[in-house]
Length: 306
Image (cartoon, rainbow, N blue to C red; front, side):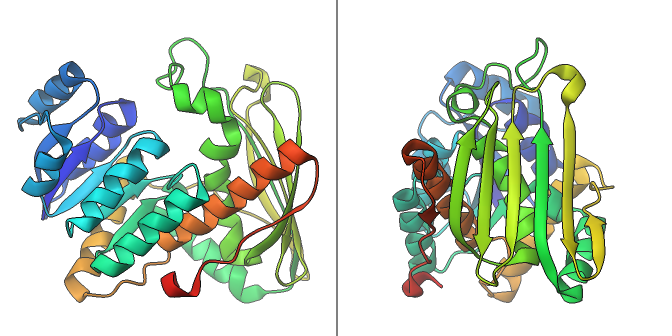
């Protein structure tokens, strides 16, 4: 499977590029980036051409791997889907619900396979935990506390403009939701409140009457970094484990699962663009709730893209 890599940053080179170069069933055919010099350097690292024109790289491949800011990603992914290219994307899918809906509709009409790399969901121990926990049922509440500190000197994400602008809600919020939704079910309403140092709190209602609470920041004090996701219910208290595979292993699993979708002709992966859109809908509702200091209903996915 010929892949084109779109992006030149730390995640594009160290995760997407490395994973594609190492996989036995993928052929990395080129790199495109918004900075031609960085694209040339990354392409040289992997021994492939650098493309000046994104559409030329789309034309040269069978599938795209995109590691770019979400507003850039969604435009390229939509063009790739229109051209019949399969999609290996990053979270969040987009920064607006309209853009996410447009990509979902385009991918559905084109019949392409798609997968969004919610990193923890590609670790087998996490998958096993979520499957067992969802089967237990009776969960009344979930809590996620994700305090990270990415703006410290030396961090590969310290210069990320989109992360500084959109904060933890859009960067690590998708990770939390990707672990909560399989157990707690669809979110119907969202309330939100801001705190210091980019902190945002979300309170979610699920369609079964359960609730969840998310507390997120990218700018926690270095001594307050924390990651906990916990379910409370009839079965007691369960804490989501951290993935026990390497990052390269998780990305390799993502490639395997996308190729399986392509080989089988199925288009029902649990983490495809439709799930990515579900996450964007919650985040967009949270943005409205923050701005207007009220609870906001989460739009249901259009039936034509279900």
